[in-house]
Length: 95
Image (cartoon, rainbow, N blue to C red):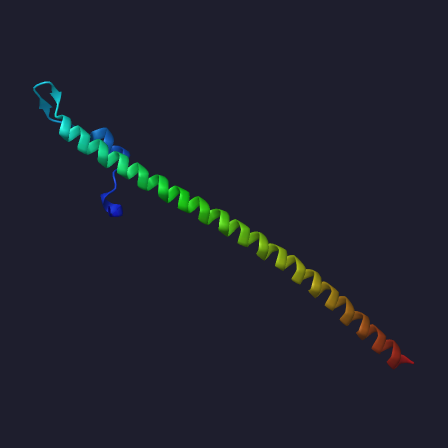
């Protein structure tokens, strides 16, 4: 079923059935309910897929944040080391 063909809640609310001798046409109601069930199944599967994707993206984000923290610490240490070397060179030059 193509996305444009998926049922909406308005489709369900606005759906009307022809009256048969003993009420609604059973075949028509069954067909509509089958469409509703299929649509709900597709929504359910899509929701599961998206939840799984969000979970995977969350894990990747945690990994990237961890790498970011490690890189920031490395940059701070490199900056401190560079500052110490510059200070040492200035001290050496002053002597």
